[in-house]
Image (cartoon, rainbow over all chains, first blue to last red; front, side, top):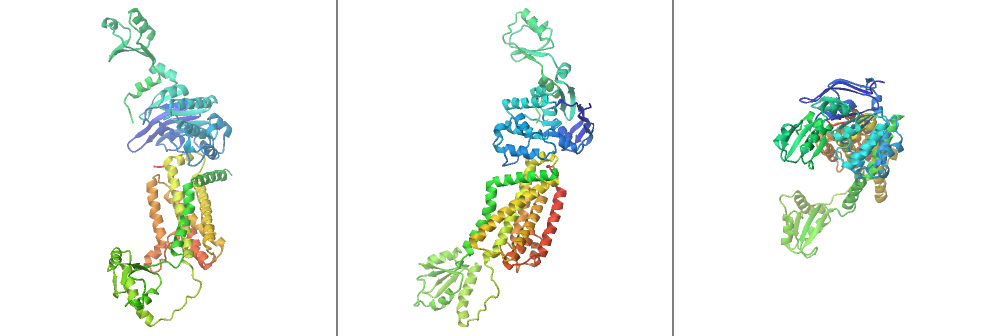
Length: 294
Length: 346
C-alpha cells in the first residue's frame, strides 16, 4: 500500500515572503506525522495548502496516489488552530450540524464517547472551557469518520491537565490506525504522539525522521550540571566538554556514566548534580536557534 | 438528497441561533410595534397641534379688546393655546422657540419670532383669520375613502423592519461568520457555497415572515387595520421584498470580514432607503431626480405595492410592475452575491 498523502516540492509564496519553500514528504497510512517549527516557520501555511484552503504557488499534493478530488473533503477531518463556534447552539447541536454536512458520518455516540463530551452535550458553545472547546473541535474533525486527520496546534493555550487529556484522546484515535498530520511547537507533544517528525523553519523541512532516529543522529547524550567547586586540575583531565556558567559547571557528554564515575573517583560532591538527557526540545533549539520569534 | 439535507441542517441551526438570541428576536418584533404605538399616540387623536400660541392673562374674556378677532383664530385646528400669567414668561418661551407666537389680548398686541418659520405661519394665520371668516368660503368635502395616517404608515413600518432585519440579519451574520472562522470551518466540509447561501436565505425568509406576521397580527388586533386587497398578494409582496433585500445583503457580505466596514456599507444602503422610500412621508413634490432614485430601492417597490394592496385594495394586476422589478433586483443581487462570495477573509 502506498502513502496516503504525498507532498512534492510544495511552495507557497506571498509577495515578499516564502512561507513554504519546497517541502516534500510522504505519510504512510496509520502513522502520525508531526510538523514542528517555531512560530512563523510555515507550519500552518503548509498544512492549509495541503488541506485545500490555500492555493499552492507550486508543487504537487497527492491523496491516496491521486490529485485531491471531490472525495478529499469527505474523507479528511480538520481541526483548525483558531475557530469560533456558532453562537447560541449547544455542543450536541453543533456536532450534529457539522456531522450532517458530510456524506459519510461517524456514529454520534462514538464521537461523544471518544472525545468525552457526555457532560457538556447540552451546554451552550460559549459556556464551555478551552479544553472542552478543543475536544468539541476534535469531535467535529472526526465527524465524517475520516481517513486522514489534520490537527493544527490542537493543544495551544490549554493548561497542562487539559493538554494531557487531549493527548489521551489523540492516542486513542491513533490506536484505531487513523492517519494524522499534527502541527505543534510542544516537543513533548510531538515526542509522545508522532511516529515521524519533520522540523520546519523558514518554510523548509530541516530534518525528518522518527523522534528516536532524529535524537540519535542529531542529538543524544546528556547535559550534567553541578554546583560545586571543581579545581582546574580535575577539569583539565576531564573526558568531556565542559564550561563554567555563573555558579555552576555545565558538562556536555555522550557518556554520562563515564563522567560521573570520574567525578566519584575525584571525590567531587555530587549532591547538587543534575543530569538532563537530551530530548527533542534540545534538538529543536539546536536546529532552529535559540532566538525568540514572534 | 445530500444537498437538501445540508441546506436543511444549516437552516435549522441558523433558526435556532436567531430564536435563542432573545435580544435580536425581541427587537425584531418590538421595534415596529413601538413605532406604531408611538405614532398612534402622536397622530391617533385630534390633539396633534402643529403650532403653539401663548396667551397672556385670562384665557378668554369678551371684555378684552382683541377677543373678537382672537375668537376666530381659536377656531383654527392644530393650534394649541397656552395660558401665561405674565408677558415676560411668555416672551421668554418665545425667545427659546418653545412657543411660536405670543398674544396679549388685554393690550391687543402680539409677538412672533423673526427667525422661526412656524412663528411666521402662525402670525399669518392670526392675521388672516379675521379676513377669512368675514367672507367664508364654501368648503367641499373630499370624495372617496380617506386612509387614516396610521394605516398609510403601517406598510412602511413593516417594510422598514423587513429591510433592517434582512440587511443586518444576513449581511452582518455572514461577515461575523467569516471573521471568526466559522465559514472557514464550513469550507473544508463538502458544503458548497450555494448550499450555504440558500440556507441563509431560507432561514432569514422564514424568520422575517414569522416576525412580520406576529407584528402584523398584533397591530391588526390593537388598531383594527384593514387590508382592502388580498392577503395572499400582500404575502407575495413581502416575500419578494424580503428576498430582494436578503440578496442585497449577500452582495455586501460576499467578501468582507470586517464588521465595521460591513456595518458602514449596510448603513449607507439602509438609511437613504428608509428616508427616500416613502416609509415616513410622501415624496410628492420632491425633486424629480430624488423621486427617480427612490424607484431604484427595493424598499420603495415593496412599500408601494403593499400600500396599494392594503390601502387601495389593489390586485396582482395593479402591482405587476413592482413584482417584476423586485424579481429583477433579486436575480441581479443574488447572481452578484454568489459570484463574489468567498468563504475566507483575505
